[in-house]
Each structure stands twice: as structure tokens, then as C-alpha cells.
Length: 292
Image 1 (cartoon, rainbow, N blue to C red):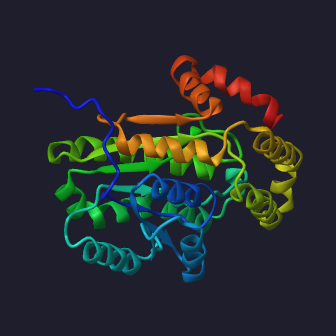
Image 2 (image 1 turned 90 degrees about the horizontal axis):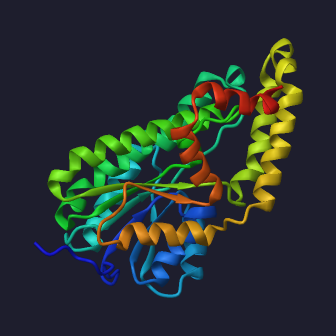
Image 3 (image 1 turned 90 degrees about the vertical axis):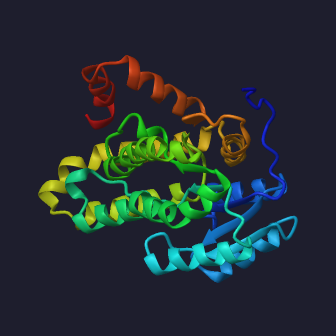
């Protein structure tokens, strides 16, 4: 058997992308459309969809109302895409939608943790389930967007890292279960990239710390502020750009044989290497400077 060695042409292939209204999702939706994919861009608000449509270079981009935490919304979106493609199937689902809860875990209320997991993990599973009949028809691909925190869990990003570790495990299971049907599953791990999400991290983190009892919040406040400052500086000075992420997703969708994991940025690659080479005690010591 001769294995295909040329990239898979995007023309005529449909891709569903969640979380396309801003940041990495917006950049990715526009990049995939420009490169020839037919993109169904998942957004939660109609006005975000119209803004995205206006930025597109062609009618290949079509906004779809898709809230990954709402089962009815997911089912409706799947039916809309199936109707629009004439039942030919979907080449790929890119599970990009996500939020980031940043605070010491002791200060994260259970309902906020549930909301984090509902969006980043349960929502990704729900979307994948809804589109699997169409993916099987096309023998297509699932791309789950995780992060470098899916390899190494950083203090004060515990809720977010919990979701990313769960998404990594879910991706491994899906990859093994769907292989007999010709559907591949890849993970894309972006490192720190300057996007609007970081503007919300400080505000949300300080709000959660302010809600915690002072005898608890006071234990973490100084080191958490150091973490927030460090995080913002890393985002400002990062050499990794949203377009790097978009190009990586494109490679995952067009490679003759999709890889299991793709890393975007030096920090994401470094985290993957350190997680394999360093014992837990060494990683713990490395984070001591941050936590004090």
C-alpha cells in the first residue's frame, strides 16, 4: 500500500470551529477560510458572527450560533451544518472554545470550577459527539485545542490546567476509539500568546481572591500578584502570534498523517519536554520561586 505523502487539499472540505468570535479562534477561522476550507465558525452571538463574516475574504466562512455549554445549541448547529453540506460530511471539528479561571485553587468556588470544565471539556465532548456521524462519513479529523498547561500544571492556573489535563486524556481515548472508523484526533498545544483572554485573567482572579475569606486570601495575595505580573509580561514579550496557532491547526488538518500532538511556541515545546524528563520534585522546586 502506498501512503499519501502530499498535503490534503482544503478545497471543498468543511471545518467546524468553536470559539471563533475572538482571539485564537477568530484568527484560525479567517486563516482556514483564506486557505480554502469551508469554515462553519461557531459563535455565541449573532453580532460576533456578522463581524467575522465581514472580515472574511469569501463566502466560504459561515457563522453558526454554537454555545458549547448548551446541548440544544450544539444539536441545532450540527443539524444546520449537515443541511448546509448536503449530508456529505464534515472534514474536521476544531474544539477551540474555552475560558480561563485563574486563582489559587483554595479560592475557586466549586461552581466556577464546574463552569471551567463545562466549557473546556464537557463542551468539547458534546460538540464531538454531535458531529461524529458527519465526521465518520468523511473519515475526517478532530482537533482539540489544549495548551502547554496540559503537560505541566502551573500554580494559580489550577482550574484551567485541570481542564486541559482532562482534555488531553479525553483526546487520547477518542483517538483510540475512533481509529477503526478512520477519524483521527490531534491535540494542538499553544503556549503563551497575547490575546484578549489575558485581559480577563487578572480581573477574574482578583475578583475570586476578593470573594475568599481574608484569612485565606491573605495567604496568597502577594505571590498571586507576582504571578499575574509575570503572566502579563510573558504575554507581552511572547514571540508566538495568533497566526502561528492558525498555521499549526491548518497543518493538523492537511497533513497526510495527522500527528498526535502539535506544539505552538517555544514555551509549549519546553513544557512538553520538561514533563517527560524532570521528576515531580524538580518541577515543584522550580515553581517555589513563584509561590514563595
